[in-house]
Image 1 (cartoon, helix red, strand yellow):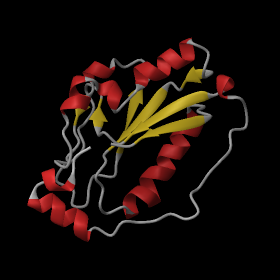
Image 2 (cartoon, rainbow, N blue to C red):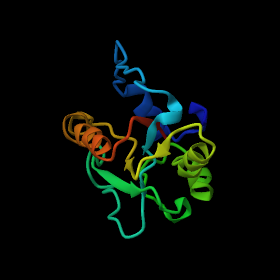
Image 3 (cartoon, rainbow, N blue to C red):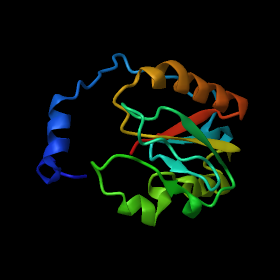
Image 4 (cartoon, one colour):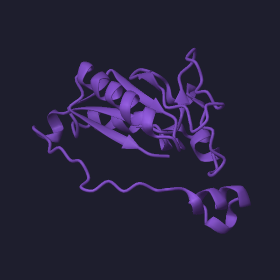
Length: 160
């Protein structure tokens, strides 16, 4: 994680003036069955895109709040980094996409019986969205419906 002194002046000013939101109470839903019986989905805000899928639009003011399906059988090394933020070093997640989209680790947990299975599709979002209305009102309800459709019992959120 970068120290604020390591960021550009533009990014330091942005972070200083950004209106951070607080959610209280934090929404929570308890598991309805043991983890070893749960099908797990994955949501990452790394902005990764599978081969042949349209990239996130970096020109959308406030951030592209759309989302992309990622098949469970995708090779994480084929995912393309389309994250627009310059506020962090992308080298780590580009060298090892499992850092930001831990699909290989999820498969290992399923193979070891720690989780019941891996959802057949996952979701990639763009992080660094400063205008959150479209994300909250349209994209997130669609993502929730998608995970119900693919039978996910729980979803792991991997923020970037």
